Length: 128
Image 1 (tube, rainbow, N blue to C red):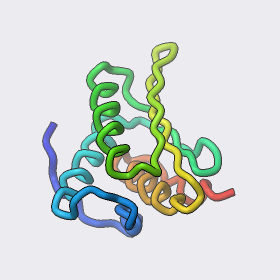
Image 2: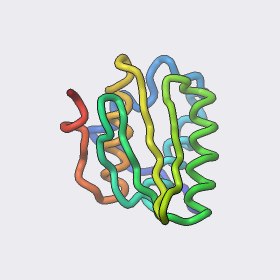
Image 3: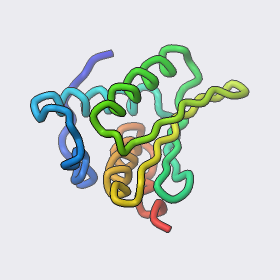
Image 4: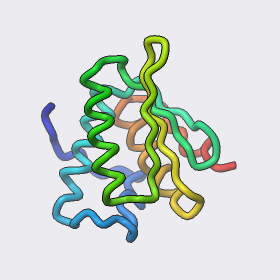
């Protein structure tokens, strides 16, 4: 996995809210790790209900491991995220949810995932 800086896009606003405890200096690396996951493993991004988005991943052990490890670390600094990794019937998905005050953060993450995986942005469809 090669990490590289991706130019900022309009969806990057709100990516790291005040509630994030990850040191500012470490944030670009974390964004690059998410970008690599999005680009290499995400096959679909879609809303899964209010405050939730579902990322379909390539059904491979490496993708599952990367998603689980990244989700665990992200939960440590941004406790408002809830991650659920599901493998079922040959599919793999990462569902991400947030509470109401952090929907903008989730929308920014979903838009970036869509952009990095070449999927259409679901941000406009996420609000009830």
